[in-house]
Image (cartoon, rainbow over all chains, first blue to last red; front, side, top):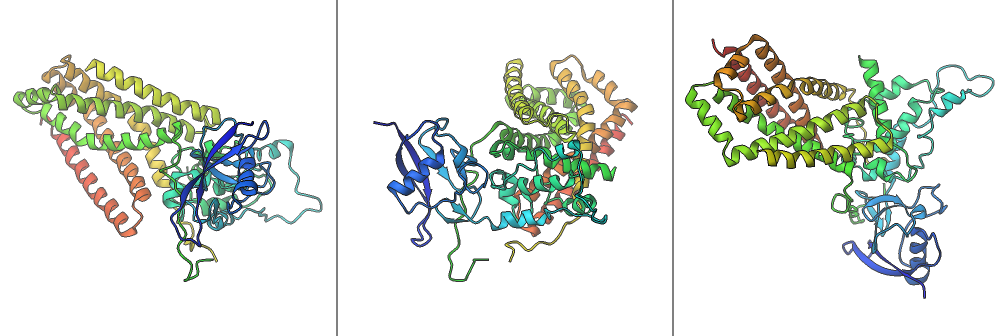
Length: 236
Length: 128
Length: 120
């Protein structure tokens, strides 16, 4: 007889039109090192096929199963059941429009990512070979390139909850910093122009929920502060 | 976007009511709260100063008020707010300057300022 | 189609952030002084004449003036950020910030007048 895991999962069915509610499930502990996603899969495959959630790679690379787990955002596929207090409360990412159960509308999140123009901008003519970087210049991108855009950080940020229509949020700003620090990018001034806005950038009040939530253990707070320092440097 | 006229409004997923409070989040919110208390204390401080530099009678009145229950409580509240706002302010400034931005230090420093403020509030309460 | 129509960058916001931090540094240096004075008066280490001697001094008046200016800038920027955060309706936001600016600057000018009138 295996140990049972208690879960309480956020449910919302747009066709029923009812208010969202929490539903309790019990799932057997099937293997050592079992992850939260395994429990959700068990519910969907064995107990209740109507439970809806996003998942793809199952190993923390695709970033589709960002959820609010016991009050903190994280990826279900890399969150071990063992460390979680039961019943495990599983909710969709906070402050998002719920489409069904644990699936939320990510359109605005990706709009904001697009807004920082996440591509290499250059003025110099394209060289014959690649645009080379020294190992040191490449190392500048550590802590930025790992971001998988799962949305855990942005949806954990109270500033984004209240002003998400204008504040870009930690994920987009971490990515903005990724291009600012990239030695090959030649549009830092233009990027800073676009970011220098009391709402887009300066809503960050160092709450640091982003850092606590990031499943890749990145530090969006530090990235945002780096952008602020770049603006400070060109103003003073 | 998918917001057709026939489609009902999607519910917003819960946020503040369910998010687990973490030290850094508490530190940031407490910075606001203590700042707000201090703003309210400024008129009081100037009123005290005004009274103390007035006639000797005025001075005695202000002294008596300061030693009353409400006066002591105000001083205590302003004291811990100032202490906290000061400590966390230095923390914020150093983070802005980029001196202690590692994840570990950000976490640790939040715990330190909150802990220091709690200790100070007890000490201050004992002293008065 | 985007969910939110983007009005572009306001190219501002740096000044608020910068003034907030600049005034914070001034306050961090100056604020302990009147606090220590208040505590000494409270405990009776300094009587009224002692207090007046200290406060009437030209340097005290100068420091007090700096303190009040920094305090008002810091408080104004702090409350402004809070209003921007929590008041979503632009009309209310602008009205509140405007009212705050008038009240705070009036208060500041009144206090500067009192400080420089001390002792005659």
